[in-house]
Image 1 (cartoon, rainbow, N blue to C red):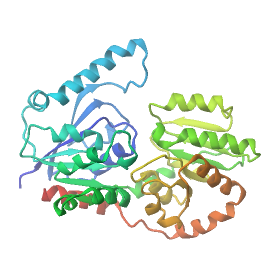
Image 2 (cartoon, one colour; image 1 turned 120 degrees about the vertical axis):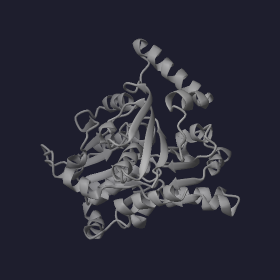
Image 3 (cartoon, helix red, strand yellow; image 1 turned 90 degrees about the vertical axis):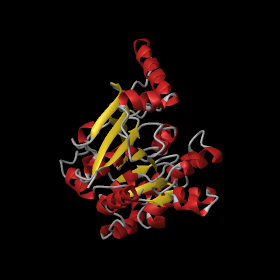
Image 4 (tube, one colour; image 1 turned 60 degrees about the vertical axis):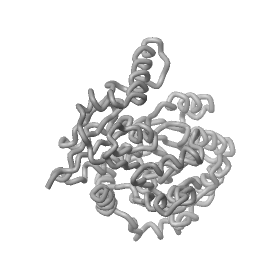
Length: 380
């Protein structure tokens, strides 16, 4: 049986949700069934070492992501941008030189940002597959007209009911509707449980601890979380906040933490390969996001039976079963404030969530998600 040849495109393997989900998917594929080339714009990221050795990793540039404008970094930054734009504008150069004129059966954009790169491929015979992890109606620059460009793909995988509904409403034909398929992100719950036992950090006091985990950029709303933290402290509600993750907005959020005068009560841990002991040690998990697609981190919090407070963004109502498994707040700073205040003044309110979480089983699992994606690939 001939292996299907697949080209997967993504920016890097930094510590983001989409990157983690992609690597989890690759780790659970049968290696004798597919021939995969994973093409990165930048050979960088914490998940590089997790990619199975049978996957051929290629890249356009190498080195760490540059998130500042320090004079010494500017030439490298300019070179990377120009090189990537050149290959995007003239894809035949990429396919001839980097990909050695290889013919693929499937070209797979692992995030929405690679829509054009895959659609503009000189390989007209390949099937085009897209994986969308965000509510694009909340992403700057994604007009209705631009979102409709995704219907040029053969299949579009979406990760939540809300994203699926957006596409079904924009579809003009039954054929376009048939291209949209909802598949929950692959999640290795057993790995989460095992890693959470790797020694829980002990708190030096008994103040309630709120933890939030994610890539540090504006979407995640960590600035809102810190402002609410300050507001509650000023009102006389002692507690602590921990933010686990890194990203291009890290220094800005860290600066805000200092400006607010909460350096002693709010911790920015940065990236860690294993955040789960910190999850376990916290009293509450808080999702302060401005928008999401299907926040995988909530699945991790559910797996670890945490008390959850989450803003009402795409995927949250679905994941928390309309508020049975956690507190859903208005998607605003005030919403976050009222949710955290509820936790601090009336922790008994969370008992019902704990009772529901106690015997809760995910309606999706790792094997089902991987099998469904393989089924799509096999039938393209």
